[in-house]
Image 1: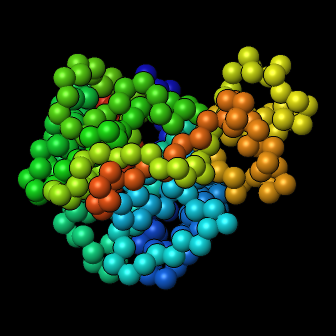
Image 2: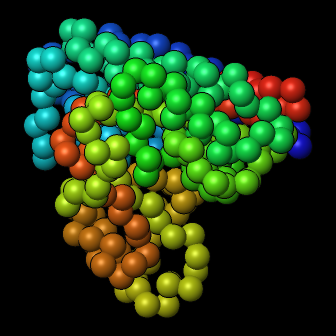
Image 3: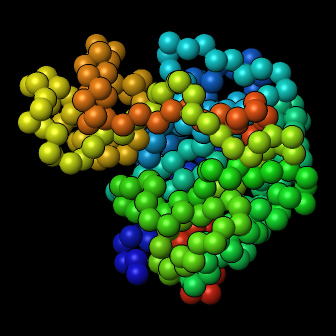
Length: 297
């Protein structure tokens, strides 16, 4: 079970995440640079008293996850875009993860509605002892009623202190898994929805601009001094949480690439819908209780 101090940190992170998410529709506009959206989100998280738990994701149309803009790119939000903004807040290592999809001007309204209602219905089912697969079945069935498909190889996830993805996964489809949700555990519930003509699958692209560093020390003796110094800096700053190159001095980027090649830094490829179909997302973080759950975002 969580201690009262842990609840306070989680609720603080959730309050900030909710506040920033509610401001996102005002940031996402046609013709705006995606980088400016991500930076504004991250700056507001800090302004409101938290730290970004991971780089703000700004994913457009068929791009489903793991895309954060970099200064070398010039990604402009196009007319009629479906824009997913996924953000996380960390307070003393306790994480709140949330996402919203914005349609411009009112594109793909039903796709967004399907994602939001799948999330809403899933949350209604959550309590201690419920199987994760039962939550997935509710998400799957809600999306199916719209004639759409869930993304079956993306899922929600358990969260622990300084660990964004761990433990039990929360599927977006029906499965035969028997794992049950436990009281006091934290989960991010995040339905991803694509059109009825889409594949319902995401694939990895060749683009990688989100990373995490290994906290294990068994790699350290293979590194040069300058590589080890950068690794230590990344460990101290991120505590193993995801980050992006724009958070690092540009003169360190080539050195960072060496850490990637040596396997001490992991990259997360941008994920795109296999057929290029649009994707919508909705997400909340919950604390499981005996008789329900507390939505902290």
